[in-house]
Amino acid sequence: MSFISLCLGGVAAHRVDAADSPELPHIVILFVDDMGYGDPGCYNPDSKIPTPHIDGLARDGMRFTNAHAPGPLCHPSRYGLLTGRYPFRTDVSVWPRQALIEEGRMTIASLLQFGGYRTVMVGKWHLGFDEQGYDQALPGGPVDRGFDHFFGIRASTDIPPYFYIRGDRAVEPPTEHIADNRTPGWSPIQGAFWRGGGIAPNLKLEEVLPRFTDESIATIRTHSRESAGQPLLLYVALPAPHTPWLPSEPFIGRSGAGMYGDFMMMVDHEIGRVLAALDETGMADDALVIFTSDNGPVWYPYDVQRFGHDSAGGLRGMKGDAWEAGHRMPLVMRWPGKIEPGSVSGQVISFTDLLATFAAILDAPLPKDAAEDSFSLLPVLLGEQPDDRPIRPSVVVPALTGMLSIRSGPWKLIDGLGSGGFSQPRQIAPEPGGPRGQLYHLDDDPGETTNRWLDEPEIRDRLLDELEQVRTSGRSRPPH
Image (cartoon, rainbow, N blue to C red; front, top):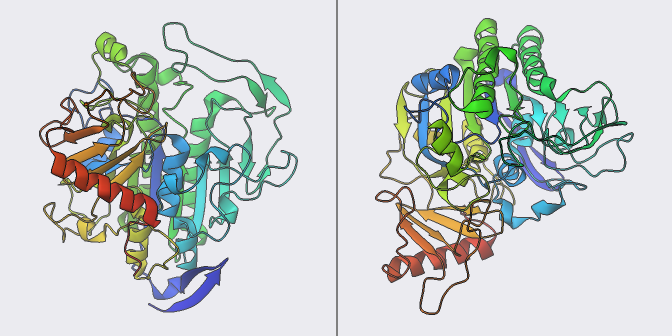
């Protein structure tokens, strides 16, 4: 394969002649929103939510049991996924008015674009634009960060204003208004919850999810028909089962987990439609398909009791938390002829690892100023790296409040007390002589019930030192 060295905004990249690289796979990322580790049947045999299409991917591919979102919320997770960089290294709070990914920073899209891929994103961006009004161009978004094409929305379907974007322009500006909505019998941030605000005249919230599926299918069919010799990156960021929970009629009452379960069934159905398009066009056999969720669910202990469905799959906490349910995610990858069907990996990994993995597929070196926290998973995918040889030294995740956790082997340290997120207690002041943080042995205690901060001082201090090194050095991947 031939490379032409290029430089974009100070970031080195390597252009690949796609015609010289017929072995490059299509890459399809199916990224759902606010789904729990215990929702898919392939992760939880007691799940009350049928997920046949996700389960089918696991049957035909590799299921990761220790994959972590870079953050337990929508925008930090997406930042890490796209940049290969931990989100605590930037100010993610600026997203409502400013682009989070700075100009010139390498992303999975820009890497693959310069590797000869056609790069397309459909769905929820939630990484900000340099906004100057919705009747103006929206710079700093997907088409300025490596994607050839984008059709999607600014953020979640419960955060106004609500409008579709194609390229860097609003399809219709949000000139009308929609009122707040809540659902009786659920918490204020569950059910058919959305915030009131601006909305485009022809956008209906219940139509957003299937509209994105339709757009993804059209992208696959068009690519197969018009660009068959070129590899495709398709990043499908579905805004569900995030609130508002809006299952369509065929799914209402079908699950055993209320509105949430019904909506999750619909999400699985939409995933099945995208997979069917890959089959129909003959692209599936040459595609690396990656399925996961951005962070954990909004599912309280009361919900577990009344429905008998544990969205967290036995893990502690929920979305936003430093505890495992906030960021340990279902992750399934299918790659025919490369990944062993029905395989399982216990490697402790992060979504940040996708960028280095794609660089390895391209056989392209990463520059020093990119993918600072990304480690290639290619040896794991090809069955060359067993679980007893860690592919990365540790994984660091920030919680909603900024509390940091570090996972190294079976040990997990959290540098504070409480959940750090939505679960109560969020934060606890240390008592004199008591623990200042949390330390768990997750192999023995996956539910994080026994804090061993005071019992294992050597392990605690080692992890504190390692966390400080990762935090202050600017990177965790060696710069070579």
